[in-house]
Image (tube, rainbow, N blue to C red; front, top):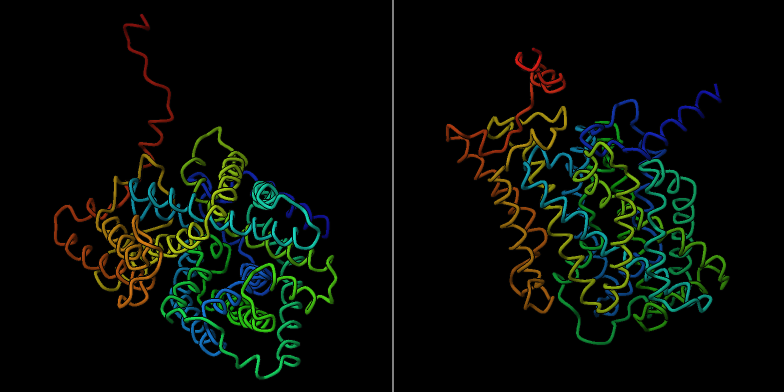
Length: 491
């Protein structure tokens, strides 16, 4: 029995190295490959919000003048908003079994899917560059390894390794390495901090003029949002109740507990400088043992980059994976090169990082909102049903779902403008415009419903809405048969 299980695992790894159900040939995860909620998905999401990367949210908000109470309000609002967005996104992936980018081919058509895949391929790699340099900075602080920029580039390039194994690669690392380390460390750190930190430190008011609550919420949402929830939950069982625990537990640890610990550590040393607070955190929570700091920092940062690379990789496979001679490994190598470039570009200016994270929070989740609006809302509101029981080849995809593409572009422009990240803007959210990121998500979904209702009135409604044209069995058979030889040539 044991040898049979080992054989099945090896076969699964070989298959996922080849395609990971991320191309038009192998695009839907079968029910037999779905993983357990508590054995796979909860540990996975625990490691998507781990370690010092999310303590840094607490450092940052302390530096922006937030008291502990105000910071907790900020992350509670951002986490609630993200959860309301992410649950239907996760269920969409679990019920359809397809990646974010493959579903975009059916829903947005050729033009929209190409645009979304390009955005998803490139923008998350900004996070890869940031996280790789963050880990290089930690190593430099512990052991003096440098130069930081060069080490960060190497970390970003090598960071693709787990993704070569597909979902199993990142899931195995999460279950057996990152999740146990993260959970034990954060609980110990926070409990100790609350016990030994004087009340006047916990109730202190950071120096300087505080940033607005809206700006803090936008920053926290940027830290929380991935946008590719369908990519990961396509391996979950197709039930809403199986989608909630991983998201809720991951958010609670990564967006509540870790920022709280980070804020307290920053208040203890009266500094928001990452290096200063990191050194203090290692001394406080890891008994000053640099080897423990090295293990924790490396395990958690690798887990974060796994998620960002996985998002980009599935988008790349949507574009490239359909080629007969293409291998998933080739896409990994391309993204490793781009990740290395981002590790060089992002540190050139902190503004580069804030802009790219705000752009990611606006673009990919808005596309996801439009997709689950198409699948979960339009059938009920307008009677428009688009089956996703197979992935269309590029030749079968419509030129474009114009209402969806229009809604996406308008929402991205709106969210980018209100967040102050358009060319010529200073990168700060516009006052009086509310939470631009969330408003962009809502605008995308609402505008798509309105435009789809108008399109339905047209005789060409299905063409306007970009329904794919699947080839019949007879057409496929005719294409695969050898061409007929003219009678004159036979003679």
